[in-house]
Length: 378
Ligand code: SF4
Ligand code: SF4
Ligand code: SF4
Image (tube, rainbow, N blue to C red; front, side, top):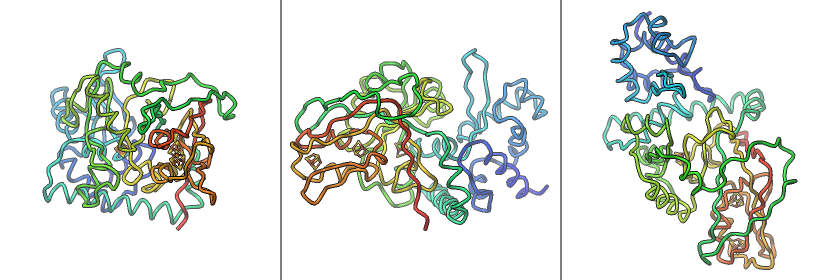
């Protein structure tokens, strides 16, 4: 095999490490050349059969000594290609990361990266790859979209509970009949409770907005950048590799508050998309840059939520603030200047309720719903 064939093979293996379909093409190979050196390619093929391995397994699959493996892992984890943290039993596990969602792309742009030619080139290559992915999805829309629309939700909305203009609590209405979705263990609902749960909290850059900055198309919604949180094992990994920094609970709460006031949506991520398991991270997303947001979506979005907004039309003055800030275009104004929202699009983030000058929006709390939004066929 020549070098390009080896990169192609590595690309094929990496493309099966995550749930997002990635085209194995020249653009991917160009990207991989920035993250995997030629003498590391054979090591990547050791993950062909099994994406997570212990040291003993890796010695067999790679044919390398412990010392050689540690040397390769040190460099590859620093570039966001391999995740190396002990499991719950304290045994070190090495996992080959996908390119995206969540892998090399996210960890690269979570760190503080310099604005230079190299990083701009990487950024533009990712743009190109995403455009090619979009084209692939659009070309095979009828075959791919039904399948991709059944995938589990990648994130869960954690709503805002305070109204900013009036400095009041948002009204919460309990309705257990809101959805027919399966009953599950109720996950942490408040962002403050979530922060209290973890002793290890790290913050990094919003990789979506940071990537857009590098590509020259900065976020239209906010200048906030350092507000992507990781917890526990993920916090240790990202901070050890220089993608994030450890912070106190107090600092985390200050950053989260700023995110709320900027109209950003708290979205929690759980291991294997299982909302009964403790969160690994929380993002504060805008509508324009977020890969899991409507303006930027390539494949269908699936979001889990226990909330749904409802407008008190007696209080609504028709200012349109909720429509302007709604993350999913669920909010609208009627001809008689009263706000409403489309339930099937509402992810229950509470951004509209937080910014409403009348505190006219309540949140209905119920069983978990999955909100699915598909990209349009072009
Ligand atoms: S998912 Fe949201 S907060 Fe996280 S990196 Fe993307 S836009 Fe930023
Ligand atoms: S922000 Fe409040 S007052 Fe303004 S349109 Fe929406 S619901 Fe009505
Ligand atoms: S209407 Fe929009 S902003 Fe309000 S909770 Fe639903 S998704 Fe969020």
